[in-house]
Length: 339
Image (cartoon, rainbow, N blue to C red):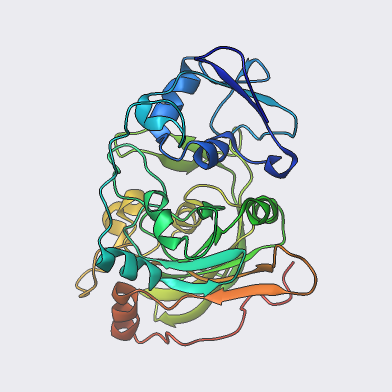
């Protein structure tokens, strides 16, 4: 539903299947050309309001709430709006489209699972012009709706990324990712070997500023609770380890900060460990060695159906695994029985 209060200001009502969606994700659905920076500006200046009140990008919406939408730049208006022609995004070549579609690990009528490559940002931001969110039309296939993001991976993290192919699936999957129904298994190489070999890290995290952009630090006073289970699968003496991790919460950079906090930073994570993130003398690429290996969750249509997707290691990690003598074909769930 929508109700225009004036030719320039629009009010839209949140529908039941949009309940509990973040405000920034709601905007992406309705105004896909509105970038994160532009949206932040509109929110910061109070031009966008929810039920007449100021809001943030992370505000969770409820069915029936009204969203005030100010006059948008012509390029940010939805299709069909009376506006000047929008400047077109750089067209993807047939080769680029084929390469993106080749990343698909699983696809049905509701869900697409991708093997996101390291170095590809999921969403735009400061100084980020190439990102997956801008390419989603190439993954529409035969669906009427554009695929929707339901969770994120860091730019430098590779592995399983889930997309919803319709609004119904987006709502259900978003709810699952906020709850305890999703099992996310990550693989990483660490500098040093965590002790004990199996453990639980319970360290609250808070975002902080800094010259290197968004950073996160342990903060038991003002941070949000963050819990990670880990298990050492293989090790090379005391130098390095092959570690599986299961984040029970979904905080920004959680695994990177948690592993650094116990003295075994993820290999290549110079952002949090500086030179301590590298193995002296080793012929290893200085890239982050963190991979979203496996994702297990109920299908959004319910019943007994499950989604269980595994992503192969990226080339730089596969090369390191061979160099360190680790096995890249381990199977099973190292956290089976852990709740």
